[in-house]
Each structure stands twice: as structure tokens, then as C-alpha cells.
Length: 410
Image 1: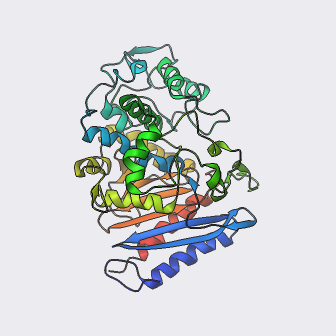
Image 2: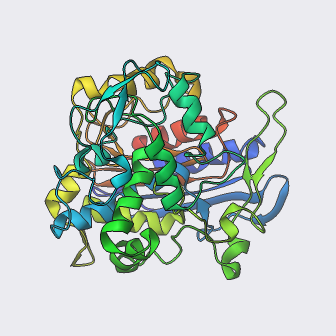
Image 3: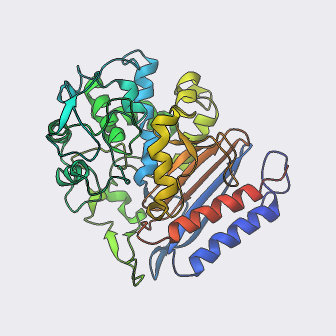
């Protein structure tokens, strides 16, 4: 245990953190977890419980997790590399690389039939893709509308029984749909992050994973991060559970062997496809805290990091994100009320809980959470494999962040 330290955590605070996490595991609601906290050059890790519900192999520091939407803050770095190298510009139209999205039609109203459209006022730009404002996305306030039904029917999002098609087919299907909003008008979740991966692949001529590995993962030493788990590591991947919301019965949504992450996917999804470990994610978020530098080597420029990790939305663009967080609380069990959004991640623009303004990161629907906090020079990563069919992973995360912040001792 660390002692009281002006740059770290108090021993009593870390003891409480462990006790709170252990209480969740001992309740039987969370099979196991890995938590990593770091501050001022000190890192503390807890690996509690088991990989499977009901026992078996223990959770370990090097357990590999499906990161779900916590993929977004990491995968977006690939676009920032291209911006740094002037291979992309923020206000370039995406049409040369994504011709499927040229000459868009936009719904006359967000809930209009798919054939009730007007022309887009302008092309979609790189900036629109980065800020999740290109005009289409997961809109939890618009479920049941013709456009949201079409997004699901076309298999454009993960987590459905059918897997997402390969990138060119995915783009073809996306290009057949109208936009729900004019480019740049409204923040909408998720689809832009998958689109960013296709953009990177087409600009570079490499697969999205190849480019990420070459420019982000390998320079950071992220040796266990990718879009699937190789056979020689599959024993480090736990099952992903989606408990029955009524009975609480533990149902395995994805098994390690023969499951979705046991082989390379047709679509390398920047929005939710990565697998990783606590230490790999720590290296990435610490690099962001360091202004783009890892162990003396520059990965991203300081301005690129600042663009990613500060709010990029106007109040008008932000309105649907706020509405989802405040009025559709049941979807994330009260998470997501940070305020702003940068590139691929949330940014706190007001203080609504223990975390201060400026904290950045995101959570995943598989029970993953990763944030960094510049004002306290702090990183926290909490990983389990329990879907949001029940509130337990959200409650675990809230308690993790509360106890992490009370452990600061200066």
C-alpha cells in the first residue's frame, strides 16, 4: 500500500477502494473485475473475483476485456495522427474517401418517413465525423422512428444477433440512408466512430487495425490491444454476461472460445470493437495526460490531444446528448451526465459529482470505464464483463469513481 503522498493516494483511501470493490464482487452481482488507479507516477491495481460467474480462474492484472464503447477514446487517435501529418484537414469534405456519403439527403424532420427529405446544405467534413455530428447516429431519444429502425435493420450497429458487414458493404448500406440531421447540426452517438475507422483505412490504404497498431498500439507498448483475441491468449478473456433484467440470471452474451472476439472481425469497429487490458489502457490515457508523449517519445501533438480532450460541441449540438443523459437515465443508469464531448470521448464541463471539470474518457456497455483527470494528474480504469441489462456494472463504476476521488490525499 502507498502511504500518504502529495502526488498519490492515501493508504486508508486505497483500503476503502478495495473494500468497496470487494463488496460488489462478494454480492454475487459482479463475477470479477480489474481496477487500475494511477497518480503522480504511482500505480495501484486490484484484481478481484473470478473470470466466470460462479468461480473458476481468478481475475488477473493481464485479463483481456472487451472494451465496447471505451474503444472510442483510443481508436480516434488514428484520425489525429493523420491530422498531425496533414493527410487530413478538419474542414475537408470526406467525399474523396467516402464517396458513398456525397450528395446527402436529409430527413425533413427527425421522425419523417425515409423518403421525405431535403438536400444537405453542405458536404460532411472530417470535423463532423470527429465530433459525432455528421448527421446520423444512435439516437436513444428517437427509438422507433423510421430512420432508427432502418439503422438497426441494415445491421449498421454492433450488439445485434447479426454481425456488422465488412467496411465497403457497411458504407454501401450507410450511403443508402438519408441523414437524420444536417451535417454539423446535432451530436449523435456511435456511428461516427465506426465511420472514422473506415476513413482512416481508406486514407492510409491499410486496415484500421494495422494503422492503429503501427502508430498507436506498438509505440505505447499496448501488446494486448486489438480487434480480436488470438488463440494463444483466449484463456485470458472472460465470458461477457448480459444478466436477465427480471430474474437476474447470468446469461453469457459472448463466450471466449468460438465467440465474436475469437477471430478477426469483418468490420474493425472503432466505436466498440477493441479488446484490451488495464495496463494497455493506462499507457494510452497517461500519454494523453502527458500531452501526447509516452516515455519521451511523441505519439500525438499537444494540440491534437487538446482538441480530443476538451469540449468541441456548441450548446445546440450538445442538446440531444444532454437529453439522453438526463431524461433517458434508464439507458445508462444515470451515467453520461458529464456535459461536453471532445473527439471520441466525454469531457466534463460542469461538476455534477466527485470528478472535476476537465476529466475526460468514456464508459462501455460491457462494464468498462476509463477516464483521466488533468487537474489531479489521475487515471482510473475499471474493467468487468457485465452488460447494462442490469444496473450493477453502473453502480460498481459510480462507487469506483467516488472512492477513487476520496482516496486523493493532498
